[in-house]
Length: 244
Image (cartoon, rainbow, N blue to C red; front, side, top):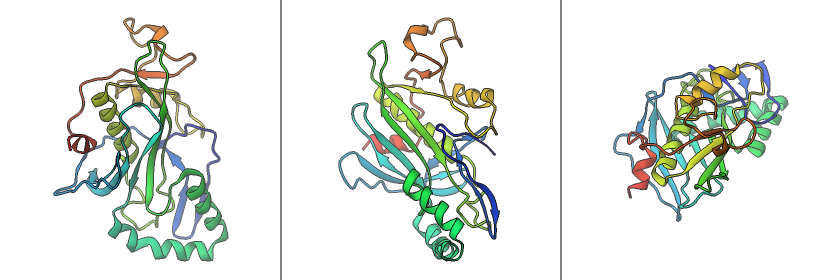
């Protein structure tokens, strides 16, 4: 699995008993099938917030977050289902109590990235700016982390979580008529820029040089990529929330 980090955050790569700890961010080059879980019910616990059961490449997950009506700061989070997390939670707590290194890295994961505790992926978004003054959101960070899960867990080497989060965000932006900007930054050296950029291009993100009909002045200064609103992908579970 190829991965990439958006910010210069220290990555940890170490083999310890029963765990392969690898802090990783956005999954690349995986074909992802995302759909609402059968008979899934959407929870709307407070205005703008939601929770819905989904499936990614055959495994069940929980997608939660908030949906603003205007570009603003918000996040989308993918977690293990409650029953799946409860099966391994005690094992992870036991490992943390026995291994101080694991405990310190797990705490950093929880405090610094708001992952752990069953959370395995998230996307952080803020209000963006566009020279055209079109409503815009900016992706600050996409991250996934499966390394804290036990090796014998079916979720430890699961794929497609990062793709699922981004695809749902794009569907939301398309429905709202928002542009999306991001900076395709590699930090850990394990992913070449072309792979990362191609991953975004397949989802409609472009540099000004990609096509002649894209005005360079419509893009952020520097190397930010821009995605214009498209026809929403009706297969994305987040649209079920928007339709309620």
